[in-house]
Length: 214
Image 1: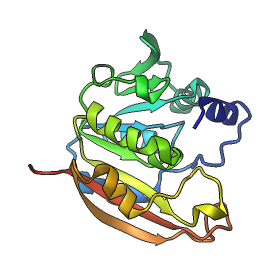
Image 2: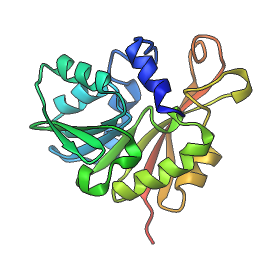
Image 3: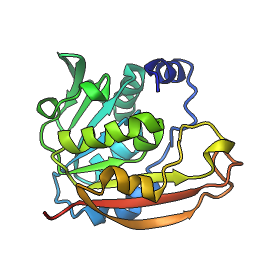
């Protein structure tokens, strides 16, 4: 998907995808990751998600990646923080004591930029990408995070009825992308009340990805 699509969405404030509260699936299932206080959680394509202040409130450190600088300015404004901004190659690093957000193309983010992470929370990254980008993203994410365990939210619906995002990602596709590196188990699966965007029947699922034992 072209970067201009997301820049235009944020510039025009067309951000219906933004949830104004912590995601209930994250709140209910964060313990599946077995994280200790102070663990560092990576949130790819994070926008200004309310999941970040919630993770911080639980004693975790957070790293994020986001294309839109507008979204990240709003995120730090909402947090009441003034980050130090440091250019790093094609990525701008916005940082305060317990949060690092990297602004730019996620495929320019390296393991060296990101640093070590203990887990990944993917609410809106995999499903935000069209099919031709999802395989590349999944491999790239596993590589830059050292195959850290993940919580991944997906939606499954008849893609012919609606243009994404969010795009439909089946269990079979998820396993195709991640099965070589992770053991995958379902933690939740249920019909979306009222359907996606209030009219398209869809199923929402939460997956736990644990590093596969070789």
